[in-house]
Length: 263
Image 1 (cartoon, helix red, strand yellow):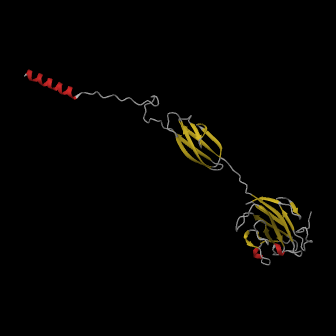
Image 2 (cartoon, rainbow, N blue to C red; image 1 turned 135 degrees about the vertical axis):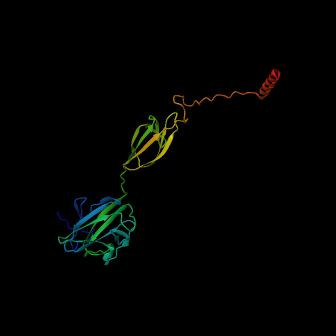
Image 3 (cartoon, rainbow, N blue to C red; image 1 turned 90 degrees about the vertical axis):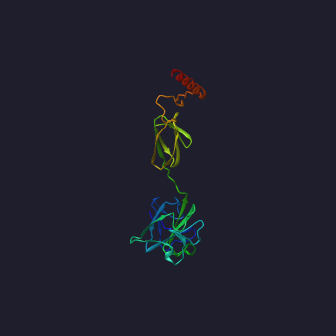
């Protein structure tokens, strides 16, 4: 069903019928326009009908923008009535239809979160110069903060010997072997501890949707310790036998006296 557009509630019918269609809504938009909400950085496909026109001209008005409007794909370019290069232009096909996809993260700066008005006109005319003789239509577009989809990663931790305690970012996480799903992306500290062995600490980078692996070989607290010796018991070293010097000299003197008698 076709709808004839008015641009504002107090303006008479347009000279040229101009229809604005938003595929995402699957509705013809009649004024007052249905509001469309789009996360900043997403695209908004626009299409419509402008019988009798060769080209339609699109521009934008809204928060912190010039009253006359700016170029839809470059908000650093103010529209100038009569200068087509300051407008986004979409050709009209022989059947009177046009289409354009607006990338809301435009060139020339970053739009604020807020509500904007997209104008589609049959002439290169800015907002303050539009009159009842100009065919145009509008749609209200609310830009919201970008939506972020967070995909967690994971960490797989093993140790030799197994059964070691695992701490992640200072929090106990279990014992090896261990699978940790749903770990937030970013840098994490993994520590592996087991009684009688030196603790091992590693910094691990987890990527979204990825899985980091930590493989550790634990080293005993006393390297080279014979097997079976209790942890913490040092090896026994035989004590040397001390011989007093004076006693040794006395023994030599007695030996010399005995040798002289035998002669």
